Length: 311
Image (tube, rainbow, N blue to C red; front, side, top):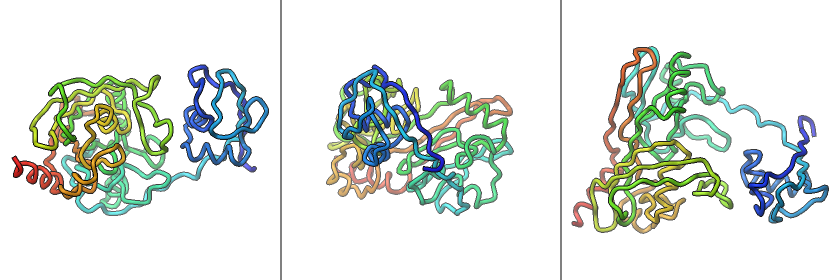
């Protein structure tokens, strides 16, 4: 195969007992589906022999993997994003209020609108730092999550904002409507997160995952759900969704993480009820603390109106 690369290396002891496809995904950053395809195509040997994707690996076993060539770079498409609001803009940063159904940046498998594409269509110049499809992006929101994001426009802003997010300096607060009533009413979830062991598109609380800390406080309780104020100490993919699901209180409407579809339908929700309501950070040029707030979009506000009417 042109562009293919062979890797030979031992299975880390920490992956002892994992399925082969899961171990490959963890070791190389593949999706579980891609790992399974490589195994089925005979591109993976364990101690010199081909085995099934469900084979449990042994720590120290030697893997021979014929790596696929890198994917073609994803291109940014300048496309207007209806409903995306510019909350703040200067020569260094732009703060946007992202609507639902919009990704932060292009990625393989996503052909819908993006924040970066929307800014390009509106004529914004953003930082050229970072991967081509992620230029200017220093943090992200899920496609179905609405609210505040900051994007770097200058190279100075990119480097300083990346540092801030890495050091957990910015204040990121969300409001989340979750099923049931968390007990205690205020708490901290300190549980490591990594890719789900069997589901390609999910994340999960996994022993040995990346440290992840979420603080929550009750704002309002309803018969079937509770509105929480959530503050992130870390910023893992799907962190709030994973942590609340681990408490058996998934975000209302979050069908990927086990939410009740009948409740979502009754409230008219077609996505998780999760909104990035507040964002604060040190301005990369002025070095002054700046902060911004966002109101609920119509679908989330409507769901709350229905719940309040039932009290």
